[in-house]
Image 1 (tube, rainbow, N blue to C red):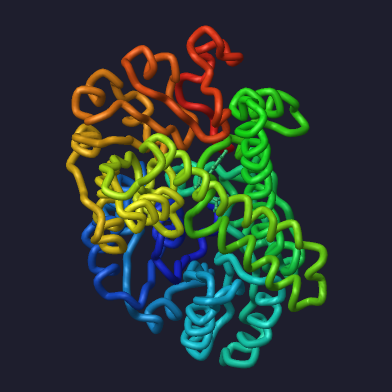
Image 2: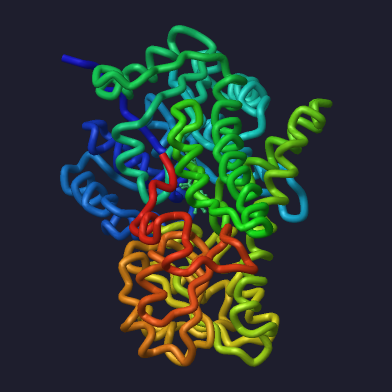
Length: 466
Ligand code: UDX
């Protein structure tokens, strides 16, 4: 009979809620803990406070089986858990590039004095390198059980929209540990994945912390690289989509995170590249990560280029024009609008004097909270209604498959700007639309017979990450 440690998950945001439900699905007894009573109440009733495909049934199953429970009580968590996973948020500091570690500090200083027997505390949150070592010392100092409380670091690589799959069947597991005991604890948790052949990397604490920020920085660099190439394409008449395919066909490069468009956003990539750079600077190695400043700048320029494209299609000025927007979440299959390029563009165009009407399959509520000044439609057709220009800003499947004839009937003028390079230009042009896209030449749009991409070669959903 395999030993199954009792687990707690501290912090039940996107990461923690997904982690807790997946651990229960893997057969563990799990206690999810959060200081927000409303969130804990919702989770306890089986209601997910955010949109994540496939997570709802797991939450329900965990609750029904009795293996998954939720509480606001740290006392209960300390008494219950043999392994405590710390999943609290570490957002960007307001007005600075570094990470705000206040939630992490609060979590550790609350939990540690209650730990009176041997246990393992496992950090999963993304942190500046060096945080784990400081946290280990703090735990040893504050916990009545002293050195019997051990710290390990097990960074999370899950993608929003793919959280369940990425947690149950991850690409790799990183176990940052200080001893054999820490390693064994993580092997007990992830035995199913290890038996299924998932690579299990045993490292020190610093390497584990760096694994996460280095991975995200690399993904961001790939995206910005292709978007820098896209800028050149716009001036010299190249096709960045075709270039992405050509580069991605080289196995040393690979197609993931190489799709040109509006660039990256969300709660991870932007803040992680800034936080990594800020930490390097603190450590006297600012020069080493200067590249990340450029990655950030290229990414933010994508938003400006998108606004320029909209202005161009609107005839040179956005003032007084009606602009329809498809998609405001930072990526499809998510309702997350944190640092969403789509929402930033919609807001900027509104601020330039246009009437902006948006539609998103999942993120309407969250977008409305942040940008009440925008108009919200109940469907894609509603967003296109009476629009002078329609912008596709987040590549939800529904938009990729949209019928240009139907949207064309609703629009005032048939101008479409494809910010994610996912529509079939031929199809849209055949339906009478003036089709433009980011990373395509500005001055001379290829027509059906001129296109060097063979017309419909770009149609359908690309592989945008992986
Ligand atoms: C990312 C990492 O992928 C994940 O491993 C980590 O744990 C958390 O951060 P996520 O933020 O969910 O995950 O999104 P991801 O799928 O990586 O996409 C990030 C952004 O890049 C999105 O805004 C997406 O639209 C954009 N993107 C992605 C591109 O612009 N082009 C691409 O080719 C891929």
